[in-house]
Length: 324
Image 1 (cartoon, rainbow, N blue to C red):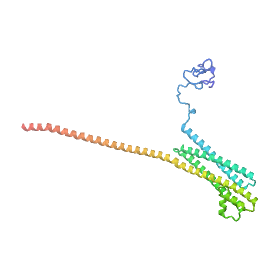
Image 2 (spheres, rainbow, N blue to C red):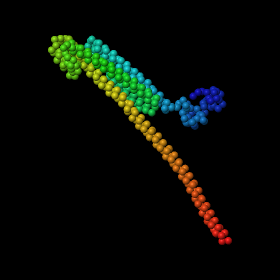
Image 3 (cartoon, rainbow, N blue to C red):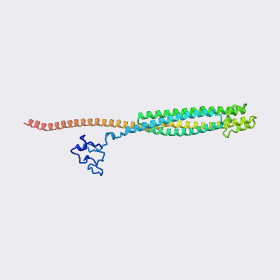
Image 4 (tube, one colour):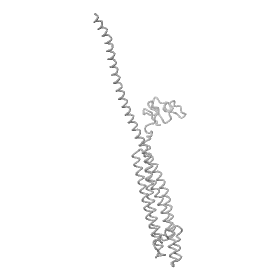
């Protein structure tokens, strides 16, 4: 609380201040303020129970700020996702060019670790974008932002799929070359069978038993085995990416269903209102017609009564006149 009172003077110059220079309307340390205000609030006879303007929280504005903060965070995560894809691509290139088995094994470990990290990140992004879309169904600005993020993420998924498909093919070509070192006369079908052998390259091992290039063949076998494992992991990653892309596509249908339901409800309410207005207008017209007919009936009744009275009085008078 400022040491200056409402008159702008020092505490000692205020004729209304107490000897201690404290504001008589302020609450002291033991809570003796009769107006029940805390020690940080001065009495204002025109104030209300509402908080000061600078302390109020505009709920819609706060929700919009939270929404765009989440948008920024998701953008950063997508950027990290793209950087991971670039790193995976670089590691694949290095793996193909490694000569030492130790270096190649280390590179494979790096690829596996980064692939697992990227997979976890992709699931997180999917869930966060889905949550963001559920918060944007009735706001066009929010919906545009959520759709942009979804489209950006799906583009990244497709790029990742392209990278994995490219290196799957390059790993296969590398393994095929190694196999032909041992069996240059092998047919394409035999090469494919050796590369795709899920039982530990049995076909390739059998070829080694009959080869006269034992040392070279053993190196080739190790190379093919490693490439076969890498191809399998890439295919697993591609399968997960395909499922992830499919899930992202389904988000559109999932979000459109409740929106369509709400739109149908809104349209139904609008139709009911229009029908209600139509019934009201018809009722007003009927009421006016009824009142108009009522007045016509009253007029006819009045004429009939007038005629009856006139005839009732006129006929006796005429009869009396004729007798005279």
